[in-house]
Length: 426
Image (cartoon, rainbow, N blue to C red; front, side, top):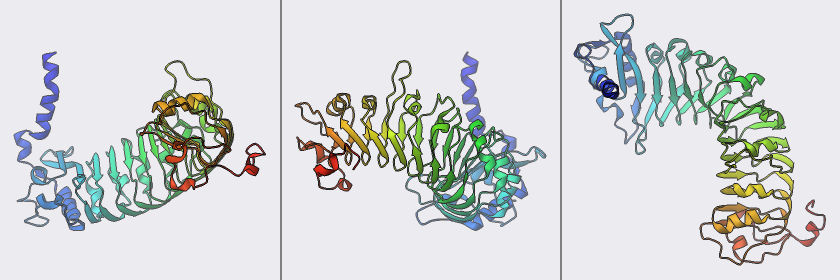
């Protein structure tokens, strides 16, 4: 046991203090030239000092410069084909610190010559231009590729979908456009677990039916131009965000597989229609349900709860749909509940009211519905709670019922009586 406890320390010492013979080795000329090009094509934004350690006194000649020992953001390892040289295995461009503005410029084509890379990270900044087209074809060892929150444009190289060891691909919040390579969403990409393409706007395409057998854990495609329906969600997923796209259709088929590990679901701001599948509210680990701003209709039905412990949601947002019927008492388990801008009727359940006045439900927005009563107890509403009941078919009996309303709720406390005579259909 004593020997095994020393193993992590030995590994750390090896990483930070490599054997003396490695300290004498030079970086392979191909990698040295690629680093030279990177330094030529990229530069620090004002306030960033990342490249302050990158010194090339002899230009392309590597005789007096030791990037593996002196350059920030670089980790090297012995070359497989020639152990008299070192190769770059990890390259992180930028510091990633919150107070650093990052880098600007573009990625040189010679970046693809760093064929021993396993990790490539470009921290947020203003790096522009396209991803080198042969990056995936040549960097076959990549496990992590992250170029997020920059100004990268063009399409996603199709070769990135065929990398055998790629675990995480994060190209979020750039200016990418064109078709999302379908193989990234297929079960053939068995190593890929995290795919983040959010916030590009111009990425499009449909999610293929084979998506149901994918092995992804985390998928974020929000803020793009994805269209079509949602096939069955893979049973491996823990995080799914498709918000702000142009997807449509019913959601019944999306929840036909068991989803034991799904924790975050965001399908908001699309064109999904029909009823919310009751099974959504019985998934054992789901804590965030975001279905707002769709065209969902019908009553809100909750499936029988799973075995104890019952579900507890941090947020349930069903606002800005066409949902009707009464508020289910089971939604009292939500920490924040948004039902506003629907067609819901009846009395707000006492279970929900109790959670609001106990402070366990910190936000309850139900404005712009056809609700008829809110049985408030003679208690003071906690200051930490935001409550909005305005523009329903009820008399607002206490000031706190509208004090927490957003500006978008308007100033009218109750609906005109003629809108309420039809039972919420007006």
